[in-house]
Amino acid sequence: MATKTLQPYEEIEKWGDSLFDTSEEEFLKDEKVLLRINELDLNEEISSQATWYGWYGVLEAQATSQLETYKYALDVYGSYLSNRLRIDFNNKGERLTEGKLENLLFEDGEYQRITEKILSTKRDVNVITAFRKALEHRLQMIITLSANKRKEQIGE
Image 1 (cartoon, rainbow, N blue to C red):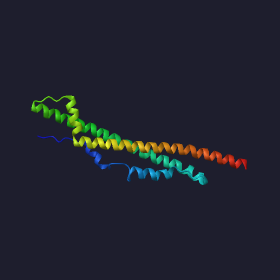
Image 2: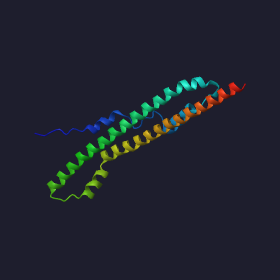
Image 3: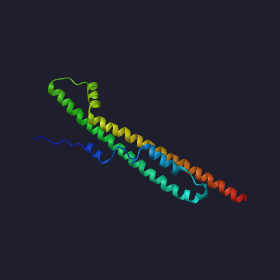
Image 4: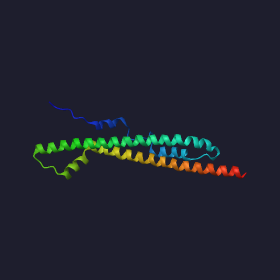
């Protein structure tokens, strides 16, 4: 009786190639607007800051979770493929060295596809993390501008 091999790495198909609906360049261009501060309405800037920071924190968590899922998928598939290759070589009476096994894994199309998803998602995580850190700097600028505005009002 043949047993069905579970392949949880197929779960990754529910995600697209990237978290970005548009190109990374378009995302960054649009988000630069968000980093600008309207000095004439600091109250609005202060109140919206937490919302934006929270939103990008959620995006970062989702991207990190997606990355971990892809890494797990690669481990599962790599283990499955490694075992299959060892059995095939053993049945043929051939010796399979660790170096040759590693090369065969890297040559496998599915292994390459999952690896590419990992690299793409790492890039997404890095971009989102950088943007979230930029929002931290934005907060400091809002605080500084607010303090300066209070000083100006007191001095008048």
